[in-house]
Image (tube, rainbow, N blue to C red; front, side, top):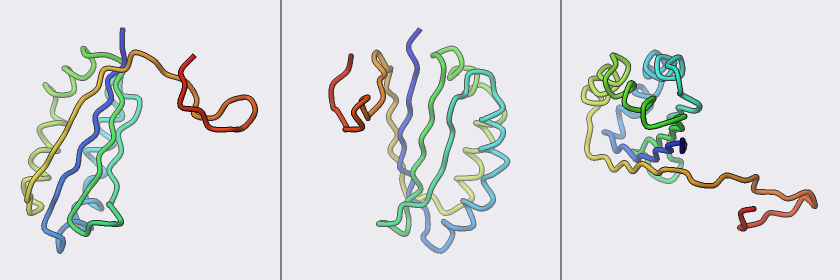
Length: 113
């Protein structure tokens, strides 16, 4: 089974972004506690005062489907909706290859395998 990665950019009212991040912890912890969740992180974009960057990694499509059907996802949607949502873009990727960025020689490589 292929892993699933999600990258999202959520734009909020800049006056509400920091509070939205501070109070998101229950939803982040809830997602991290779900079976199949490898990473789930929200962070402030240092170049855009409205933006929250979201990174997620899931073991499978099934684990992501369970997340979407669960209370953590519904709670997160409500939380974002109450935080001055301006817009959002999200994309999911099915990962077919995975390798370290740095090789044995300590140098970064763009190659897989």
